[in-house]
Length: 306
Image (tube, rainbow, N blue to C red; front, side, top):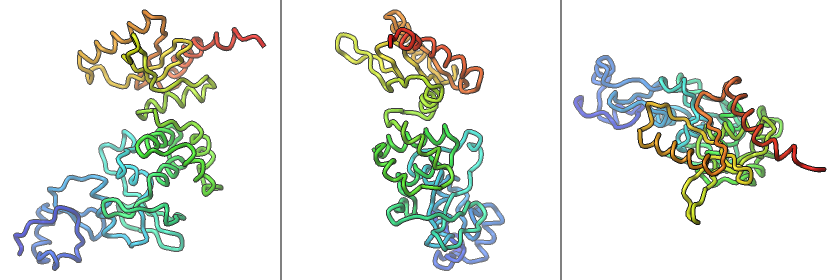
């Protein structure tokens, strides 16, 4: 059956006979680019799009049963992408771990490590052994850079209903692990109301500056009806902090007009509106909007009488 269609997903070379495909047809298809190698010994039809899920499935075919998909690959499969912008043009290695006293994989395209996992840390998704949302979130809280780690924790809390109490209760197992100091600090700030990665960055920057934390996702009511929702607000001081991450060419005219109308209404009603944009997390731009916020919050400190 040399002309039989190739499987819709990854397959091992050892399964050719079961698939009814001869080794001659396999070699010809590989030479002509009809199939491609994913990891050592595992192939896929060239018509199948490359993705982390596909690569994870391929890795699951190749690695031993005690290997578990972890970290950023696990997050991606749970629907939370924590890969960096620079990685969008390439598919990062599939991240796996072997259980203690087992050998990690040495496959190319698979980042294999060893980690202590309990049975409750592991579940099955898409036929893969994978760390649970709780375990994945905590691992990322240790191994990612600080602001990316905080954004990941908030995303998992929002998507899977994880509470700060859930995270704190699991922290005891992370004693002495690399990154645990960062994890402990970030867990105390987790808030599932935060809706995007960059909103997490905004809140973390405010915290790190030693400023009073705002209320996320605050609704402005007009005649008792919720009309405008603010990313962050200090209601008593009438200060709004908005993250505007869209480039000008990505926003429609209607979106731009809506934002301008909303902010004009807020300012006309005594609100100070601080807008944080995509590039405002570098030192100079960061200092600018944090300084503006600090100035707005100053009366809440200087007018106190002790």
